[in-house]
Image (cartoon, rainbow, N blue to C red; front, side):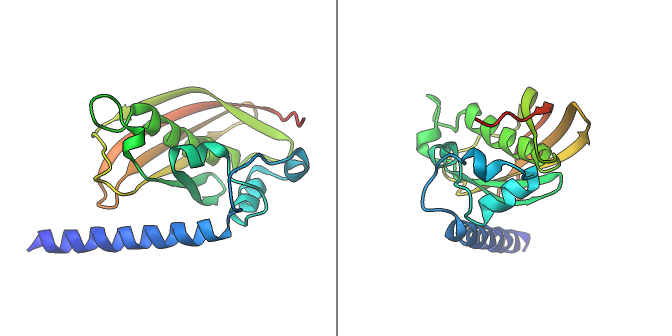
Length: 185
C-alpha cells in the first residue's frame, strides 16, 4: 500500500519542482552572461541574487553548461536545481562527481554570499564532499540546498545536501569560505 503513495508523492514533488523552475526561468534573461560591475556595485549578496532571480542580472554561463539553475535565496540559504544528464556522465555511466561538487559548491557559496554586505565577496577555501549514491539521468531533477553554518568577518562555513524528488540523498558537503573586499573591474 505504501508504494503507490510514495510514487504519487514523488510525482507531486517532481511536478512542483518543474513548475517552480519554469516560473524562475520565465523571469531570467534570455541567456547566460556576466553581470557588469555597475550591476553589482552597491548591492549586498542577497540583493545580487534577488536581481538575478528578477531577470535584472544574467545567470552565469556555467549554469547553462551544467544544466542547473538558482531557484530561491534567503539570507543564509540557497536552493539550486539541476538535471543530471548523459553529458555529465563519467566513463562508468553515472554522473561525474565534479557535477555533484559544482552544484553543491554553488548552493553553499551562494548561502554564504547572501549574508555578505555590499562590497564583500568570498571564495571557497575548502570543500568536503560525500557522494552517497550514484546518479544517472533516470533521476530527472535534483536539488541542492545550501545553508550557512557560521558567518564571520573573514571566514564563513556552510553545508548542503543534494536530494531527488523522492527524498533520497545523493550527496552532502561542507565548505569553508574566505570573505574579502570585493574588487570590481
